[in-house]
Image (cartoon, rainbow, N blue to C red; front, side, top):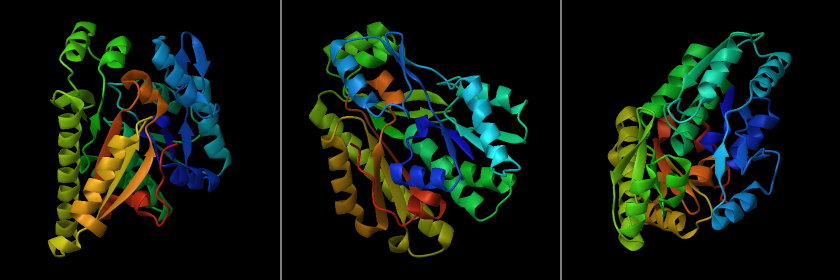
Length: 311
């Protein structure tokens, strides 16, 4: 399998899949005032981004290079893969899927490319489901079906404490970002049909975080009920996984974690991970993302492994 770093897979899951030769995760190079920082190759990239954000320096991201994609496909072929399933960040947010589709035409083995139409924790849910299906020996069609089922059952929610970096990166109009900053807007958003969409625009951090926690808990409850219905068991026997990601902001994910444990107890397994640095380039410091997946669709996210907390 092949994916990109925008999903932000939990580190333990990613390292195990890499070590087993099951998955290659393509880097999304970061650029700070023209200097490239390959995320996977530079352990200090997060510190670089924090300093750049604090100093107001220009930052951007790049899709994987054609050469990097070709090398990844060649490595999978050399490892004995006869077909590759590739899941990418939304094509509305990045040109990664275009690069993969171009490389697929020259690949030594067939490549099936799926635009997940999402990013972050929701993209990770699709990858985890596909990975679990591939481990059972499923063919490419069944692997893609597993990924699609997880993606359709998962809604990404994320909270951004400031619109400043979104305005700088062009993800929202600069004028709108300035007004939002003046009014202390702390948006709660999602990705629908591949594009960023704001769900609510609460003002002031306290009420915004409280509302975000409510929405995340609601989605977790829905995932539990969906799992129970799919498995034909009582509602209180339903299970789900909630993946929470953050970048340099501990308070909000801790509140989400506590809220879910308090409200749903052992019915929801909370998994923690870092929000991909490539997304922090556009959202600034302190963003938090969360997605809840019904247990029967959680795939590798439901594996018995320790939760992963961000650095």
